[in-house]
Length: 301
Figure (tube, helix red, strand yellow):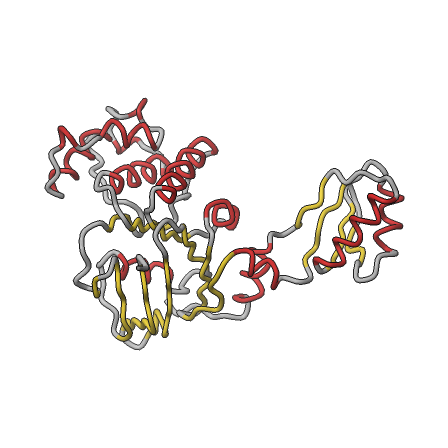
């Protein structure tokens, strides 16, 4: 059974079409990313998954139940977590636990604070928290309910490298335990590090949905940065490989080529005894596809 199954979901705000016939499938244990420009409909879709709004058309099943009568087991936030600034992090979680009918004494508050890396500031008032710390506290609040579906809107906002590490570890662990995660982000590196599948929205419509590997395979003419200990010889081999075009020079050689031509270039470098120290996209396949699929789209909301 899919954790989320949406078919033909549409949502209107007056004359504005926020979502237009959106399909979405999310399996248990999957981290599914939503990408798209501002106004593409990402937050609207997340709100539907959290039961904060009702679709105007289409069908939406969450954990086997037809929305909006979704069962428990769904947690998360959109537009930032709702917190009490005058309370400490620990007091916020205790209050939220009571609101959800959970005994604060047995809610595992200390454990979720440790998971998101906030143990050292557990007794500090939230009004002094940075954006990233509030995002992590919002994630801790969602974890109190042991959700089977976790919905997060821009969870990487304001995170420093340590915060990013904590959040990524929590999400990967949840997925390994069978929780489905749906998250939106403008950070392509986060989506690539976390997600097995991604849906790209533009003007309320799905322009791509599927595994990241499929997206990469469809991004044919990417630019790649090539570093070797002998750049002059590497440049000659690259220029002589069919399908490979020199796109720029500098500290590293930049080539533009489809994947089969790259494979041939690397094989020729190896045969010539030239080690390849780095071969990486200048722009990631996800970011390249995002730009290609959305660059001519006008926002709807």
